[in-house]
Length: 446
Image (cartoon, rainbow, N blue to C red; front, side, top):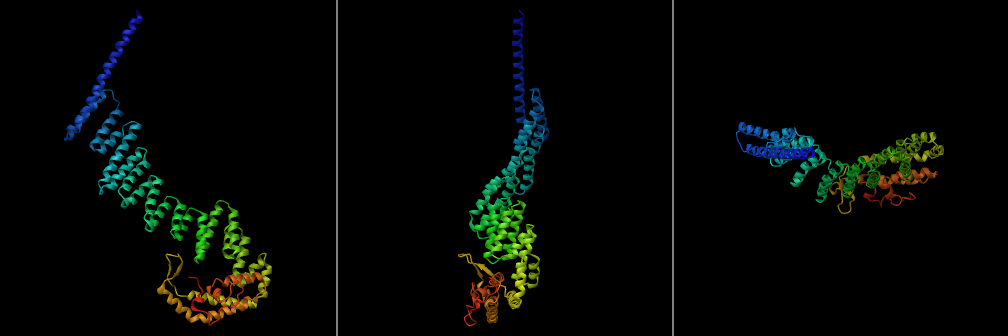
């Protein structure tokens, strides 16, 4: 009997609940209809009253406040009232807030794309709502995509938003678009790669375009020692020794950060082997090996015929034998020092001429209209330079110490005229005064 009664009671409860749920669903549907009708009303006061009635129906239908606000936010959003939509979405649960703010942000973005005067203001609002939705990066990329789709004119705006979105793949996409434009696109593509921290890519692009200074700028920023090295070698080949040597020092700084002492030693040794003593000394100093630095500073001082300094440094290092050899050859070295001083003075007075690159060979040469100035200048001192080379030949061949002789030959061959007038191996005279041409006596590499 009890079991039968219980069964009847359960059936009645289920039926009652079903009836109640049906009634609530009807109230919710009525509320939706009421809300829909409310947004057709132009009068703000009447519109507000109808929205309130819709809200009451939602409450009667059993909806919680956060769910009601979700419906109201969607209604305001559809009506284009983004301010009220944002406010209602802000009163939803966590998931509702995120989704609601995202939809408002997208609506602001759509408005911005159609209103150039209000674009900046509307995009700020869009980004603010993307941020509230927890989707700031995705939002920035979405804005950037809109600008990108509008064409190259809008690439700068797209780029700024891609960076805000940390969207490196899209930045690369634009950089590649620029690359496809050929030479005119190299600079903007380079700037993008570098700004994105893709230093090797930026350096390689500039290198392939023969823009070696820019290539070094990128390689250096990324501490890419392999790239820096090839730039240094290129600068040397172009006669830009100072720039090349500064790159080597930057390489040492990069190696020092990673405690790569083997690489530093190799770099220094390479320069010692080609008698770049001044640079070798700077490398050792930078690496903290002061004794080796001092040793090669001594050789550099001698190479530049700063005889007193060289002698002092020789005696303070393990090169006392060179100090003695210097003393023994002093009468020979003094006229060589005078020649060097004279050559340096003439070289400083050489007219400045424009240098341009041959687009086919990539070789540098003087600008044609300036080259005559160079010819006129050297025409006046051609014979004097020829005579000075004779002095070099006589005195170099009197030096008995092979190391000192080798160093001085290397130093004087830095003047192009010496390698033209004298034999590079023996320093015997090849060209007499009469057979020497004006272009044979240039003292600076062009």
